[in-house]
Image 1 (cartoon, protein in one colour):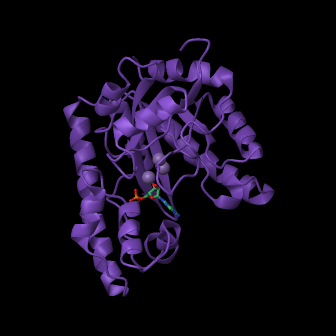
Image 2 (tube, protein in one colour):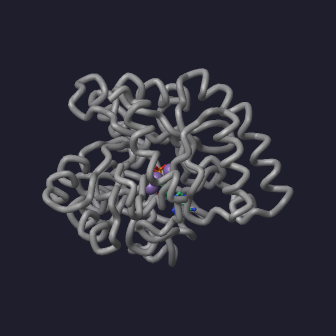
Length: 296
Ligand code: AMP
Ligand code: MN
Ligand code: MN
Ligand code: MN
């Protein structure tokens, strides 16, 4: 990357999964915001990558191909980002298709549970909302809003589809280490997304943050043994104290520091596209670090 690296954002979604903007629209927004690097990281899909690269052609914006693989663990979720994955690899695409099929079945089962829970939504409508994209709970949440059962996506998760709620359904068996190995097999660099997700810990409250950081250590031991190469240190909503702690974790473990907004568009904006400050030294180094971690 050039020394005059501008804003970079290494975590964003499109309509290929649960983002609201089509890849070309995301690229337009990135250009408006003055980004120099944008990674397209849809859930279980790389379908947004090529259209984004095409839309960015001839502009100053460089697109990093990526993916985000969501996995369930007891009492939580672990999401693994894969950078510079090779979208053309057949076994990788077969794996992604299998994960998307799992999302389809899971969506349908969640709709069944919602009927039982007295908050019926229509499965065809959920599919329509998801369009060609990988089906996710935000699409179910949208249908719940339309049916008048909840007012916001947040409320849909809290009342119905969040982990432990009546219409929650686990995804297909696919663990965090499986996700890391899948990214490696696709020629990509695996990075742990949003390493801390509890709101008080994100806000930097002392005890919750210390507990979250302590819980992260055994997780990182296992993920690094599987081949993890980076940690998403800079993330929408992370307090400075948490970022500083994560910088130390990454440096101590030899993990590449990455960062991004996790932009989805629409009303679900945790951070604006390009809105997560990444130190210049990191922004200048990270793309080359990820590329070489991916063996490119
Ligand atoms: P899924 O991939 O189907 O498990 O759905 C998870 C997605 O839902 C995440 O990637 C976020 O985009 C979104 N999400 C998760 N939790 C919440 C929440 N509490 N409120 C709003 N959106 C959420
Ligand atoms: Mn999402
Ligand atoms: Mn995620
Ligand atoms: Mn994401």
